[in-house]
Amino acid sequence: MLQLTDKAYSTAPATTAASAPRMSNDENRNTGTGGPATSVITKVKPKTKRPNLYRVLILNDDYTPMEFVVHVLEKFFQKDAEAATKIMLHVHHHGIGECGVFTYEIAETKVTQVMDFARKHQHPLQCVMEKK
Image (cartoon, rainbow, N blue to C red; front, side, top):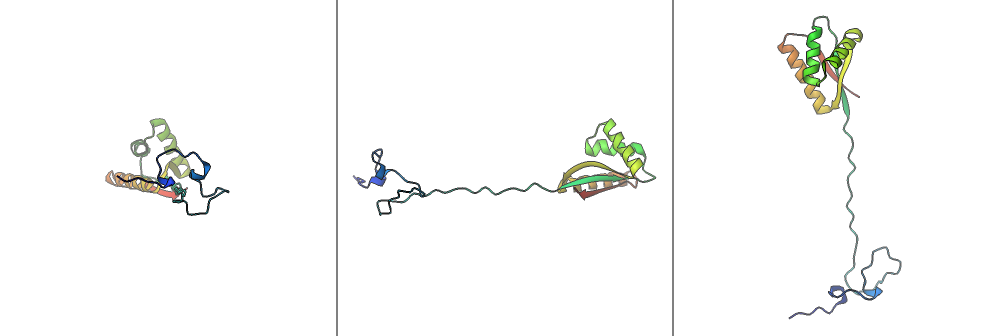
């Protein structure tokens, strides 16, 4: 049967301050070779950066029907009829309108979906994205 006689491996609770574990920044450190040293390991959390956001914009043209633009806004940007009509009128009067703000991948996907849908229905509707 093995017996451990070193104080550092003793299972009995420490009764004196000399045998208590010490932090590496204690002022009254024992620099002798009285047992294994203790150290503190800290995990460093990497700071995550917020992703860049992109505006998805619809451009006005003279050929795409207003109803089609409203339908696109409802279908791809989950706008209700009132919000879609408001955006469509803004596009009609100002030449450009913001459909939403998304991360790069989502904005790129939405632009592609709108452009493909417009081409499929033979409309020259243009949809672009720009960094916010």
